[in-house]
Length: 308
Length: 305
Image (cartoon, rainbow over all chains, first blue to last red; front, top):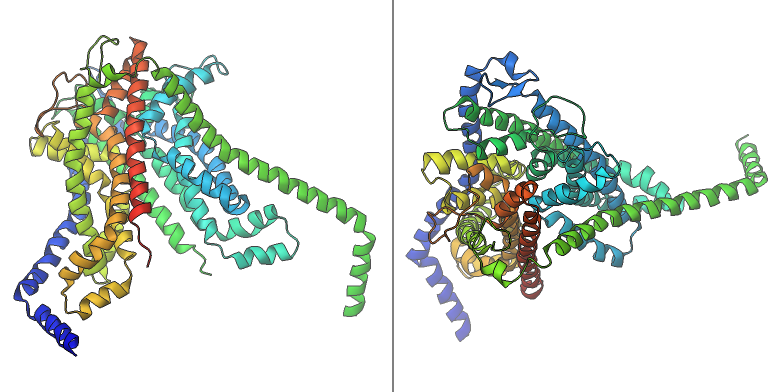
């Protein structure tokens, strides 16, 4: 009896405490303010990129921008962006040629074939691979993978697109593997058991039932992987160098969009020069590229997801 | 007719029984080969990890010692140490940690506890997930323009720290959201039933339960920040800082930056590769410590309801 009264008083006291009431009115606004910082960041990114890129596009005719001649520091500078886009696409293609097969195969192994114990041991190791800073991969590509590849391809340059491409693929593999595995894990077991009961082998179940059912998530993981490859910076800066030639020869140096930005800001492009503004133009294109990829990945996994 | 048809098929199957058996064997064989293929793909990725660690480990042997950790930068490889660089990274973390924790956790609290399901919440959530996909080099451009030039912070620790904070903010928000979401509803209900207001409930009930999860996620996000290079390079963080930073307005250099410049300079001085490898070992050790702490916190303090 005594206790009941105490609790009732306590509740009453809590409810009528004016201090709590007032704080409760203020706090949501403070949190909203914090939440708006992420929105402000996005707006800030878009505005800085557009504002300075605009100055660039005002000065440089579009015909020059979409040319293959890039020489920002020449006496008569030329700002053709195609060599950078070419370099980005080629390194990304090499990376995905490594990341997609290895990542998907690892995902299939972990989700369909591995025992619980093996999975528990292998997954953390894959996470370690994902947690290594990209600068470390860059060092590895330049000081180990390139010399190694040189024994196979003697004409390989000290800076080339092939070796950072491969290393970038290894870096992206855990991401592709873990996202694809999540997608495959979401396929209900009843579907697997149905196919197994009809006499299918595990491989047939995987290729004909699980992968088709999880395909939206798997493709989304590929697209996110490509987006990662396009935005990756340090590996290509170190491994691929800064050649601004437009060529498809991946055994030689190539510059990506990200590498151009790094080279130029750490170089001597002062504020206000055309070269400085070109950074933002390249940054804007890079931003739009990756944003479209990410939106596309979200779209696929939402639109084509099968509900079970 | 139908019965006859079925009967026919059955006999047909029986007559082909030996062929079917060999077909089955083939299918099982393919299944086994495929399994080995999938396993070897997984192991290949891990093999690369092993080679990477081994290579860097052997390259750093003889270079990584106490003098290296406590010495100052020098153009002579034998004398060079990373004391200032190490301190630069520590300073950077001192700026990044409070900023991301406060803003990140507050954002998560807003999204999980206050925001009503609607356009604003969806908008902020979409915005955060897209922000997580923006390349780090773009954050560098943002930092250079806004913090470096507009606010006049140059390439100071503060400018670098603010840039890094924005970069890892989405990771902290998502991790905190998950931690808060994992707090069981009955705890909330019990608190409200006692007459507690929403903020009192968050402060005294939800946050204490969610904090291990928040910390685990935040440490992982911070370990991303400590290894991130591109934004700092874009911000113009210089290579050779001989002075050890003493305040947030000082210029600084960080571990990954030093690895970057030493790697670039291996063409001129091959020993720089060893210095870079030794610095990488230090960086990986720091990351290993941080991740172990995160795992320990997760295992030790995570309560299940």
